[in-house]
Length: 193
Image 1: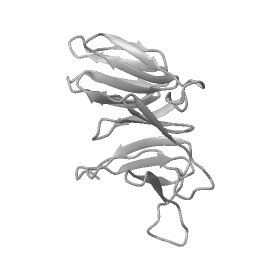
Image 2: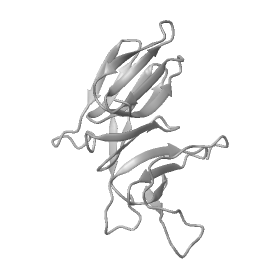
Image 3: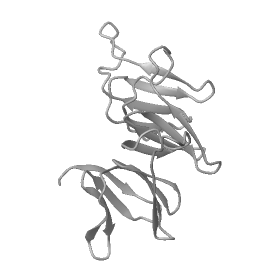
Image 4: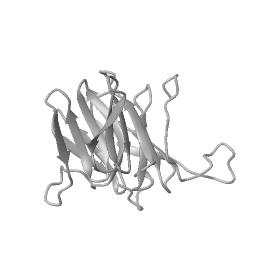
């Protein structure tokens, strides 16, 4: 398959690539790629050296490089602290060490130290809830603001104090508004925004 979703270099300088047909690890010595997972892989984050997290089409994979072990986390209807959905689009680690996981059904936030999970969904009756449940990307800026790209719900900024979302939507009458409510990807610039 020729569809590549991400390139990632970890803190050891190892290079990873993921896409619809799985995730690959690049061996610099042999100049070859080796398939490490056969599951669609869309984004990777590193919570601490040697601990990698992969957003896949079938759950959240944790790779412990030192132990050479991969653990898969899946949603469970009987466990409210599990993931909100199994199809994950993105994963980041914030400055506090929390994992933010974007899915097609909202956001799961995992605190690996306290083993706590919070979920956020679009609630039509609340104007300050997540703009759409289809979360395509998440980024944190240098001030600790969490920015969420959604499909159909515009660009969202999460307020960590009030645990609410400010939504930036398309508005034909406002030339300073974003041009579409379909936001696919975010990028932090060299200034940290």
